[in-house]
Image 1 (cartoon, rainbow, N blue to C red):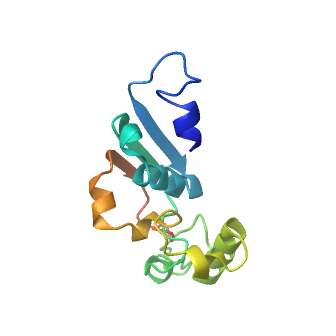
Image 2 (image 1 turned 180 degrees about the vertical axis):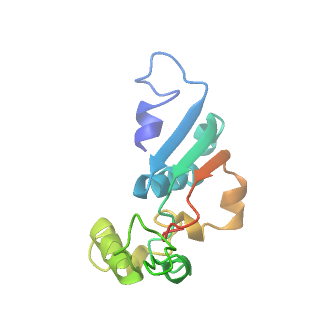
Image 3 (image 1 turned 90 degrees about the horizontal axis):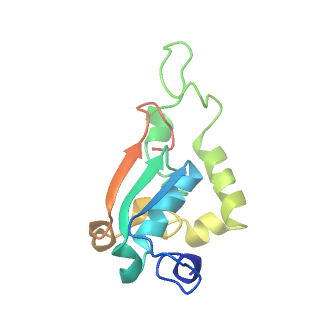
Length: 139
């Protein structure tokens, strides 16, 4: 709503925007993708791209990367930048982000977790650039 009332083609904008890019990092990377997924037809005509840097796209923490990318100091393998992060901790952070019982109530909603977006919404996305490291837990 804010973008429609303040952004391109709004009454408050003196010059019309012609190209719109949305970018975010971590939770903001998930939010950037959700904004593009939920864009109105008018805004979609201006969207040129979405950039998600290490985007947190699944607030339910249901991906297998929590096991497959867990830091293992003996093998020197996994997400060394977040050695204490695990599924339970990520779900706790998601609860803080979404509010009490937010993961159970809203966790699989594509507006919260773009990971769960339906194919018809994904097909309408602009060009998407996702940067993610191989060892990140929250893939």
